[in-house]
Each structure stands twice: as C-alpha cells, then as structure tokens.
Image 1 (cartoon, rainbow, N blue to C red):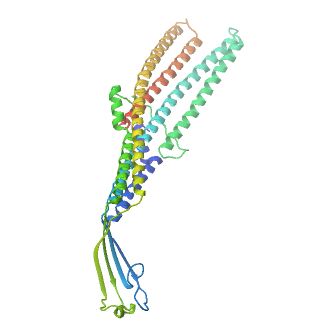
Image 2 (cartoon, rainbow, N blue to C red):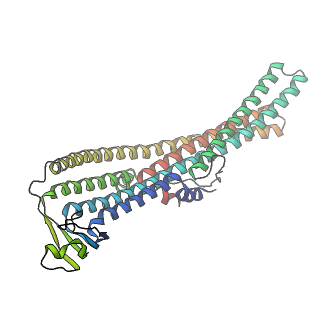
Image 3 (cartoon, rainbow, N blue to C red):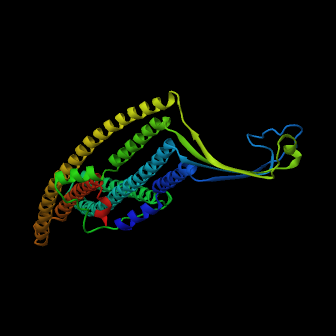
Length: 404
C-alpha cells in the first residue's frame, strides 16, 4: 500500500479513531439529555382507587380513573448553563476526535517510513551477502592454490555468516513493522502491510517562526484546554445562578368517578377536571453547596490556565527542536551522500582496474562491501530526516495535508 492509502484506511478502521467517534456521539446524546427539562413531558396514567370516606390523594393527585400531566421548564438558569456545558463538552469531544485522528495519522506515517527503511536496508544487506559469498569463493580458491592462509578462508566464511545473520535480523524487523502497520490499520496481527517504495519524501517547508505559529494555532491540545476552560466557566455561572427563580409549566387532567365519594364531600361533582399554570420557586437560602461549587470551578479555571501556559511553552520548544532536528539531519544526509559518492567512485576505479588485470576480484568485492555500508548509512540518515519532518508536520498540524 502507498502512504496515502494506509492513512485513509487507518482513519476509517483504526480502533482508537472508532472509539473517539463513539465518545463524540455519546457527548451529542448528553446534550439531548441536558435539554430534556425544556421539552414538554406528557405522562398518562391512572390513580384508580376505591374510596371509603373522604377522597384522599394518591401521590399528590386526587383519585381518578385516568390522569395526565404535562411538565416543562420555562425559566431555569442553572439548567440553561448545564445545556451550554453539554454543548461545550460536545465541542471538546470533537476536538478529541480530531486529535486522535492526527495521532493515528502520525503513528501510521512513522510505521510506514520505518517499514520502508527496513525494506531498503534488507535489500542492501542481501546484496552484501552475495558480495561476501563471492569473496569467500575467491578466497577459497586462493587457499587451495596456496596463495592465502587457511585462516583467511575462515575469516571470509565468518563475514558471510555475519551478513546472513544481519539479513535475518532485518527480515524479522520488517515482519514486525509490517504486522504493526497492519494492526494500526485495523487488521489482525497475522496480516502484513508492505510499504510501496516512494521516489519522494514528505516535505516540511516553512521557517522556524512560521512553524511555531502554526503549531500554536493548530494545536488540538490548546483547543481542548480552552474548551475545558469554557465549560468550567459555564459551571461557575450555573452555580451562581442557583439564587435565581425557577419557573415551570404545569398542566394536568383527571377523569373522576363517583365511587370515590366526591359528591358526598364536595358541593359539586365534575367528571372531567383540568388545570394549567406555572410553578414558581424562589430560592431564599439555596445552601452552601452552590457557592462551594462556584469556588471549586474557579480553582479549576486557574489550574487550566496554568496548563494552557505550560502547553504553549512546551509546544513552542518541541516545534523549535523538531525544526532544528530537520536542519541537523539534512546535514547528516548530505555528508552521508558525499561519503557514498566517494565509495562509488572508488568501486568504479577498481572495476576499471579489474578489467585491466590490475585489481583482484577480492578487492572489488571489498570495495562493493564498503559501498553497501555507505548505502546503509545514507538510507539511515534519510530515514531519520523524514521522521524529523513528520514530527514537525505533526507539531504544526499539517501532516495530513502534506501527505495528500
């Protein structure tokens, strides 16, 4: 799979992304729950009972064959703030879901470039095994001719064994990397996802200051903390609103029967009875809980503000370090490229001398082995440079756009 393909699949099937989406849906349902008091609730039932003597109440209502009640909050500031808190929590859940998508994108990209790097190194080491085998064959022939000591043949065999062991280690690492990539995409641990070699790497343009500004502007962590601060502020206002009056709409209907003795104790009997009105409650002494909740919320706000400041400082430092790491690894890659060019030129010279009979096959294969090591060093520097670029793109929130 290509890098773009694995990112698309991860954002659809990764378990962490799916869990974040479910949490967001749960937060959306919490808003509906908070709004419930402001929607009319109709309750239909019966208070059917036989009365002996004076008709008493059943759960606060007169005995009736059929009874219906309608309840709805009209003015309730604490409840209004609870709805606002639920909506802010929904926004925070959306930010968390976006942050989880960014995290999964980063993990997938890192696993992809790791798998790609291991695959390249494996191919180079396999070529090295072939070169060592040629050297061992040439050395064996020279030993039989008496031109080399037997220890040289054993030394050549040791290098072959070491190269094969190295190739086996890279093969094991590639299997693990491909399995890890499969798991992050939502597949099973027995599946394998192999990276398609790319011609170009992920780029991270921009200046250091622009990167810091982008990181602070796009940080999901800062947005989540700001959302939490807004939610705590609404909770403080809800606690302070506990002294405000509360008004509810109340309506009820009751179908009465004569066997409840209404006509014996009241001057007039009416089978159908109903009333509509409002219930007004004015808290005179709301207690000490509301002020305590308000004070607790203010303390939480102070803590969140401190977290925001600390997060901004940490994001700035991490972004600057990521940018500087890119510059450092760019230099290392250029140095490794120059070293590789020298090794390749040396090999070309020896090949020309070999064709003229002025160099041995062993010298050529040893030069080829040196070239292989330089290739490995170049691939390693290039891999670390790309990981540094991915880290900077993660910090600035531009990783998905860069991969596209």
